Amino acid sequence: MKFFAFIVVLFTGALLIYGTVDMPDWGDPGSAPNSHVSPRYIEKTLEETATPNAVTSVLADYRGYDTLGETTVIFTAGVVCIMLLRRFR
Amino acid sequence: MKERYPDVTIETVCRLLIPPIQLFGLYVIAHGHYSPGGGFQGGCILGASFIMMFIAYDIGEVKRRMREKLNTILCATGVLIYAGIGILCLVLGANYLDYGILHQILPAYPAKARALGTFGIEIGVGITVMSVMISIFLNIGTAGEHEGEPE
Amino acid sequence: MIWQLDIMFLVLVVISAIASVNVKDLLSSAILLGAYSFLMCLLWIEMGAVDVAFTEAAVGAGISTAFFIGFIFQTTRRTKD
Image (cartoon, rainbow over all chains, first blue to last red; front, side):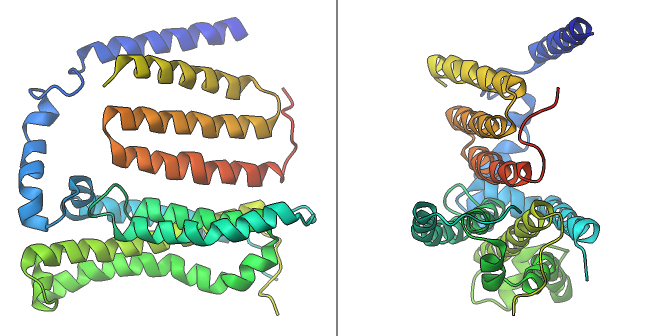
């Protein structure tokens, strides 16, 4: 049984490594994600949002809905923990 | 939680370390515009300082410093700050979470108003993450059987 | 990207991941997972993603290790299998 699990893991790992062959090179300026939206954000972030750190401006400003959903997920996790585990006397 | 064995070394080290950790957490939240960091990381560091207090002292010590009721209210306050800034933008006549319109009520030009709005929501995210981390640790670490409010 | 550092970090990541699965003591396993997260953080820094590295260090190596250590005291210290 353990040998069978090892075979499955090996096969999945080989499949994942085969999938990375199609990925663009690391830091390739001509790849798809680096040639459409990234230059726009990097060039315009200082004059549009006055924030030198582009990651913060993308996370909190351009993609604000995303971060709102993320915060709501964390809030839901805390509320569920309180509702399931806390024993109110 | 198991019963507590007092240890002078751990208590002294935690007493020395916790204020710089909390100060660093506030710095990470406030300086997220210029260096790596932001609300999530700063909130995690603030929550970790309280968890360190849980591990070094007992539950009652932390609950005296951060009341459970206050902690639960702070959980919701962070999301409320975030969504409230979005609603404020909506009321002032722009899209939801479009902070540029905040220059009507803030003494700043529109780009700077966007930076200030981003800072506001970072504070909200930090508050939520900090209190949720404390609440999860308190409720799972004691299986929900900690006592009520102290005194 | 310095490939010597890359190889060194990746080998250490694989070693700590395998060790954290195989070790019998759950506290050692939690500490090894913290070491794994910290090595991943070094790997992110080395690739230039400093913000991701900061999140990994704060969440993976800080909060989750503290969570694991706190929660192991609620259960048994050693694994059964």
